[in-house]
Image (tube, rainbow, N blue to C red; front, side, top):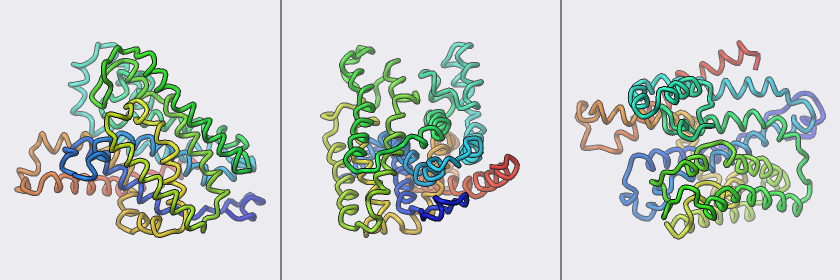
Length: 373
């Protein structure tokens, strides 16, 4: 951002970081594969598919980074209007979320049978308000991936204040702050491992326990990832955008480190891997892709960026859409079963792109005009 932007009330739009949009494309598709594939089919990349749940920690960190990248200058100058910011985030978040609720009608009866009457109606009341994630047993109500939406909404609520906090201008203090936030993020998982409140002999992606549900699905355990992303944007400001070798090394090292930990499988505690353990490595990846190097160029390829724009739609709509396609035997009726599961993945991508251009963008434009966002 130029000095002119910081010294005037006219806020220049920062340059687009297309490589991060490309990263979101691959991350969202990894979630699809995590939910609806056999990881063993992916050979060398099986650990990445089998641990697709880690993508949510990346999304939360990316959210903090991108918001800070775009708005921190306004926040520090005291010109970020919280109400206008919240309206803008609402217009971005809610139209596709509402679409996902409408597509979840088939889940109403199963949810009614799975909960007491009180909890069912509580879920029906809280879910449209983006509040279901505060009750662990209702976090995945109607649409499993939507547990992340109350968390994201909570982060949006906090951002105008978090962005005003003065970050260290020097490298060493900033790195210490990042390390401190990482330590705070690790604390819930470490406490869970020490106390084992659910009495589970072994914890993995298939485990269930009330405290484990709270750790995985409620907003507070994930707040450190969001704050880490905000601070990471400060580190991004310190590093020159054209520091080619350093940023390239950070990006490659981040990807290698993530893959190495995932390849260790059950040797790495699930409750730590689920979110905070990978925070520094995710940070390295983001810094690498925010630079100017061949790795960032690879993630900025047009097809990746094109689909990456619809990553939110893909994430939020894929779960119930896939189950509907399977229940309706859609590919079989179309005579395309021999191409499954890839034809089904293609249909999900088409649905996400259609939702982006027919729902998200038009609704966002109208709501922003109506709300003055």
